[in-house]
Amino acid sequence: MTTDPESPSGSDPVLVGSDLQLSFGRTPALRGAGMSVHAGEMVAVMGSSGSGKSTLLHCLAGILTPSSGSVLHHGREITTMPDQQRSALRRDEFGFVFQFGQLVPELTVAENVALPLRLSGHRHADGRRRSALWMDKLGVSDVADHRPGEISGGQGQRAAVARALVADPEVVFADEPTGALDSIAGEQVMALLDETARESGTAVVLVTHESRVAAYADREVLIRDGAVRQQESVR
Image (cartoon, rainbow, N blue to C red; front, side, top):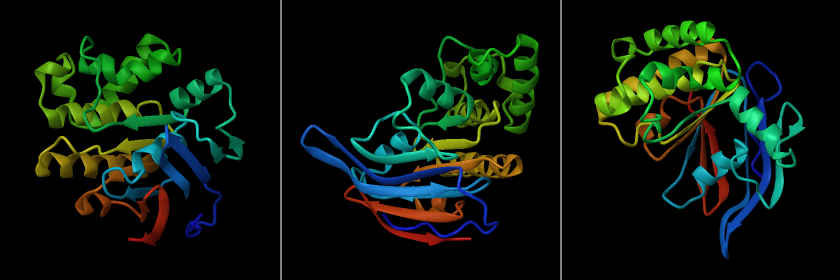
């Protein structure tokens, strides 16, 4: 595994993946990949289609279990956690933004944004207050009562960012968050994700193949054929 540059603050990383191996059938997806991310840092994972970048993100997030290797969250091994503990970790400590937003179509924007809080057992009034705050920050308050099919792609993705941040996660995983947007909407979403994540000290693992999106990151991690080939600071 290529060693990450040290955090400027000297702090320990929030999340560390080491020597991750995973195959789908006979096809290797990860071949010893690894990386780390610190609080308040955005790391862009780049690579061509099929390089393993999304698989690496899913292993770091505890969605996929690698066949070997280690993923540590504050020193706790994620890969060997029982499913219930991993689900709680993803619900309470991690936030997610995917390429197409993946908002629940039957719920309003406000209900979608508040969903992580409701699943964590927060009171309805608290969830409504916090979701209203994040919808205002992300500029989607005016469509709070609309359903996903009634809003634009940019509005839907901003709502997805609000949902990812509403529970104050330690790490946000963003998998091609601008892939379904035009360039203007994509820049808006990235600027808002960058600003709000840094304000709250949230670490961001960003998967992208677009250099203009990666430019928002502090570091770039290049993955090729399931292995990390290069890492460099960009800020």
